[in-house]
Image (cartoon, rainbow, N blue to C red; front, side, top):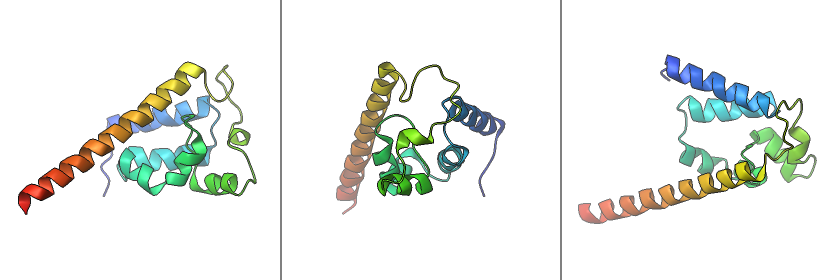
Length: 128
């Protein structure tokens, strides 16, 4: 059973409002929030499972749901086509500074993953 705290509810609401501000579809917002923020999966687990979702996001910070990812991969729609009712004044993707932040975020997570894998290998060698 997943524990729900006031902090997690607040974070969920914040992320959902944030997604709406940028004009992301509700299904994509819910997919991300439900899988990451509810504790079902860590960011690293999410990245492993939803590799295709990350690939089509083009490091924009918007990670579409699986249904939309499959449509994008079949060239039925473009990532940009999903952005509607955007309240943010900047065009999608967000300004270059935001885009660079997302790239740095991705690189940081890749570095963290490498550290975890290294530590797992090191620990397994010690136990043998």
